Length: 366
Image (cartoon, rainbow, N blue to C red; front, side, top):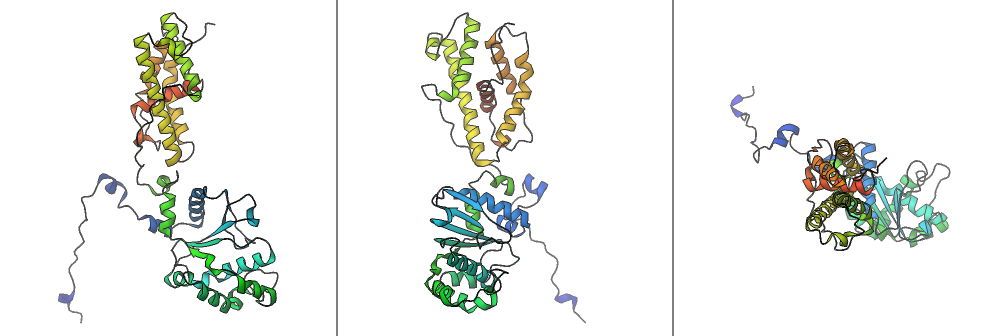
């Protein structure tokens, strides 16, 4: 009978650090590599497409291929306008429940050799294998030894490639195809690890949405240039009109308010706010999916439009001030940019909206 005295007592390991509120709400974070291994086919395809967006540059064009008759091409990066007739690289993205093995790639190597022999494309200058469960040690060693990889590929041709490349014909490794095989440069075959994919993916606007972890730091805001840029001309015109309606004057350009110290100081503040919002727009372009910043603009617009449309403002300047002040109360709860949002951003978004004529400071007399 089993002696209970030989059994160890239950002794759960204590947390390595004091749990945070986020851990209590959602549990300990799952390592990104573990998440990749659990991706569904659709998630893996989406992830590799997101990763492929980082390939421009150096590639001029990147295209994804798939389905039957893929010719061994998954993601192709073209270095010239000549497409498959020029310099290009191939990326094979495999989703398996095990690290990639030599037996998983023989037919893929066979396709590249066979279809380049037929003239469907020139051989890629590099061919990378990637897998949700990474590259197995045996395969990685083979990929680092082109001569042995070639010998193993030839030894496995009949088993994996003869009937595996295409269902229409038996592809026998004889004659001119064998000559093409013997001359083929097996040094083009290499691999990319999941860690390498993640290191590149982190620079995409899809990374935080897919893996969480919060937004990166925004960095410093660009100061407004001394000379007004063409892209800010419309909101500047609206500001000058607002000052003019208040003062009973016509201001043709920013230099014409230089003698008006109050207007000049206000003008500089409004430009700083505009550039804060432009900085947030640029930050959003690099860190969150398309449309996120525009959603934030719409939220600010709907928060301030009733104030802007109020007919009781004394002049355009008072309308602008009241509208900008109202924006400070905007507290977006669901927008992905909320953690990076500053008060100046919300105020500056009002000027972005004025720059697009979605907000108007001086209302024409009807």
